[in-house]
Image (cartoon, rainbow, N blue to C red; front, side, top):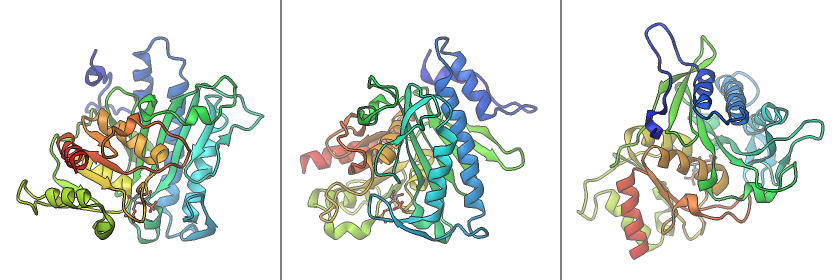
Length: 343
Ligand code: FDP
């Protein structure tokens, strides 16, 4: 059976497909499955609903603004970052499905408390991506990645987290935008669910997402142009049609990776955060942002590279490692590969 033929259930005029039902139907296609991965996805969906509630009420409740602490990246943590981080940890720590977790907001691996049993998976997540946009009501997101435990011990170790992205068994994101959407893949295509605020359920709204081969949109922060190496500048001139060798792409940069990625996934396009003289590895984190979105992108027919290499093949060496990234429609990523490798 091909990945795209694997949708077992679809909405009809009189019945809707909830994310729980969809997860269970997908699990049924794997008779040996223990149900642990399904449980992780279901728990993540609950955490996403709880975070969505907070994000929706951000202007009302006292959750806007900075919590006055810096995270491991040296960025000021926003209050909602802290809330989202705790919400995910508490939704996931007691299910007996994880051996440990890693969060963009935590310096080290997050252990499963001793009072809970552990399980065969690791969860890595960015609880609230694009958080510098929260105060101005711009979409933000949650990104997650699930890997199988490799180490011998029950409680997990760095070895479990530091696996190439190609080893992910599931990855996804939630976008808290004009509606809240959860998009995920377990390697059987990419499926999107929209939160029905009245039912309080994620409903299947975007089955089998395929990203266009050529993109319309270019998402990159051009204010770093003066710090880019010449091949990157030449590449961006190409995308913008300035060298006369292709039609110009339309520049759209929200500055929230999930929002930019989501638009480009559906409409076609390329998201880039290149290395620059001030950030030699770019800004984005391999484990918490780049790997999960690269997995989704490839599953939808797109591609993701750091320049010469496929992102999913990079062997991570530290939890908070950064990587340059070019992510999106396959033909547009191919141009980056050619020009950056040649340059
Ligand atoms: P943020 O710092 O607001 O969390 O993850 C980092 C990120 O946002 C991405 O979501 C976003 O694409 C990028 O940083 C924006 O960075 P620049 O302002 O440097 O373009």
